Length: 174
Ligand SMILES: CC(C)(COP(=O)(O)OP(=O)(O)OC[C@H]1O[C@@H](n2cnc3c(N)ncnc32)[C@H](O)[C@@H]1OP(=O)(O)O)[C@@H](O)C(=O)NCCC(=O)NCCS
Image (cartoon, rainbow, N blue to C red; front, side, top):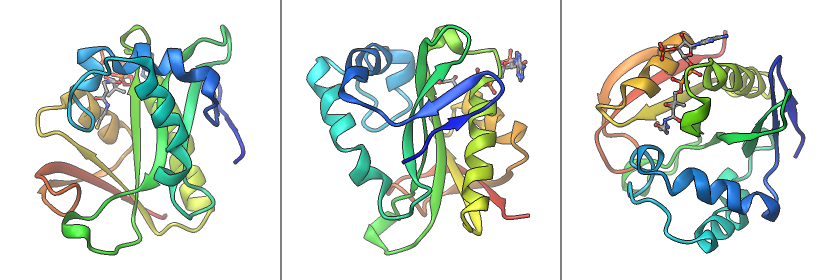
């Protein structure tokens, strides 16, 4: 898997060395609450396991990946951004991809999520994906604001993915 460089960020594959930083990120309730079960990580072994499963989560598409996301100026790890298959509700077999972002609160409010996601959208379309989706918890207004900054279309509340009702957004290949 290759890396992505943007104006201020570097997106690269995870390695086991990222486990402590990933643990610090997902042990924060304000980050964990919007992902998976919503429970903060309790132990760094959970972060190692997540890194180990990254390839599996990214699936088959060559452009899909989970990215350790760093500031170029300081090298600081600021979070995880991703372009991955989006699990259909009911286990339906659909070939759709989502973009996502989970940043440390220290890195909120600088446009980093939007900058990384813009690069992921370009990557998806360059690789021939017809559209990308993003799904957000109904009250995750910060994440919904990222979708709007990206120019995504608000699809409203949808239950097509993750077996739950989420506010979904899409962006078609131009
Ligand atoms: C969702 C999340 C990534 C959004 O982060 P964010 O920093 O608000 O989003 P952006 O990167 O788009 O930054 C936009 C903010 O930076 C400001 N900003 C500053 N410099 C900027 C620049 N150069 N370019 C763009 N925006 C800039 C914007 O004005 C905006 O500020 P505001 O929130 O006060 O309106 C972050 O809140 C997060 O990680 N939350 C926890 C995990 C989560 O919810 N993940 C999503 C699951 S669906």
